[in-house]
Length: 438
Image 1 (cartoon, one colour):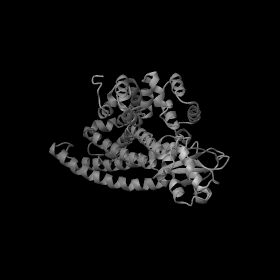
Image 2: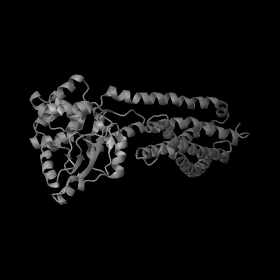
Image 3: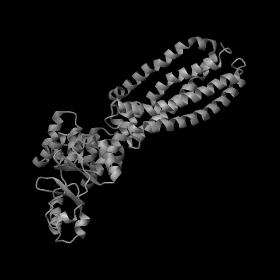
Image 4: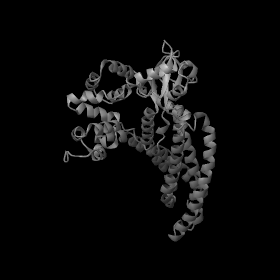
């Protein structure tokens, strides 16, 4: 490292640009408080890389600092079984068992996100005994003591009670008398995206996770969901942009991996682009007799592609936020028809005025300025309307086929609308301009 005396702020700012060797060197020079703060701010992949590159004597300290669910995340980010074994060996035996149980779940399920360490109480305990018991549990590094879960002898969830309710209740009351039995819970296999909707809808701090027999296995906290939301949003943004989701921060993805993520989409779009070539070939005779029409092709197809991309982006995001469900497709299409007609008419008028002025200024079109401009205006209206409908419906079609709606990327929508937009444009031209230019 060129400057081994980097401060915490300097190291944190430069972290994404540093090699793993420089990161380790700078990290080991921080104070214990600073290194803990920086370590907590790293994502699971960066934590895994850092721990594996630390001197063997220091690895155990940092691995054991992690809660079981965080340790499982770190282990899942490693690329080899050998590295996983190394990290597992750093844990104490009880934690290792907890982590192995979590690794049995898919990482995007509630079971893979949950922390098995949570505050638990029995329903027959007195409030005074419950508070004392929570103090002891705090020493066991439970996820939170602000909410305790009331379980029977078979570990079935019976209710939930907050620390505030315990503190304000009579010390001689039993926990069952102050607990809330209306508890929102999820199953182990609940998808992380569904979890985010539950958290948002009910404004929860944590959700208990139950197995198929109703036994409580752990809790998922809102801080876990914050990471999930960021990952899901990032993945959707990548897909909407026309690339596969990156598995690491942008600057940490090597060139070959970046090419793999992006080349497939681009190659597919190039092949789809040949649809436009086929359309142009079909209307070759028309274009030979009315070359002036070619000048407006970029204007027409960009109008349709842009309107389609807008609609697709809005619908995909609405689906992600659960604002729109598959059954709402008819409401969406009615709305987008109205929007498409309004936008298309507005843009068509702009296109009509601009085209007349342009054709007159350059004296193009053989004296048929208004007819050509009218063709352009009607085409813009038709293409924008079609692009809006196609862009809004494609996410619904993808979901119906069990694909991610976010795959309705802006480049994909634009490419599909381009070909159909040409059909609309040249079809209208063959009607309006018949007998004038050909």
